[in-house]
Image (cartoon, rainbow, N blue to C red; front, side, top):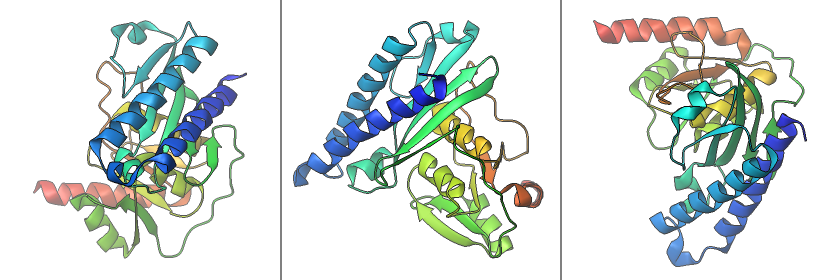
Length: 251
């Protein structure tokens, strides 16, 4: 399998496993740490075995495994989040995802985001869309903790807020045309955005840090706290408004 096909294969397999665990959970496990940990562990094991079998020479950066500095000198690094949205998963919701991405010599070269609750997987091989300028903006936001900057941005734009779960699910909503933008400032790591960004950029969406600088992966510190993923026709306006809000807050 080529890299994107492998990413899709692994993400789909992990998603199928997780969906089975979720649907088979007893009522007393719903919403518990036990169910979250079980999902994280089982998905990590499946993805680690798959990468060891199919790409044994590549490095791996995962939320659920010990990091190794050897990846910093590697040409190819798989960046994975075995279960993005453990809270939603444990609560029996559908808005969670599995992320599998490949970073290769400075760039994201392949990615897949499985959406097991929807029975679909998005990949960086999917055809790009023709994006049109939207009417009232729809912002994908956290269902539990939309940040003050995002709330201020929504108020300034008179945007509709669409609450949903995991980061991958929010980016997928933009890719699927169900939202126009996802603006995040609350803190994330590389595994939260690598696969979603690979998929989004392949679909023709704009993606960057909130200051407009590029998203860089396979850093020594994988903390990557903010991003914008949006319809490319509104990117300049969003970046300008975010900069204005941040400047005002700094005064």
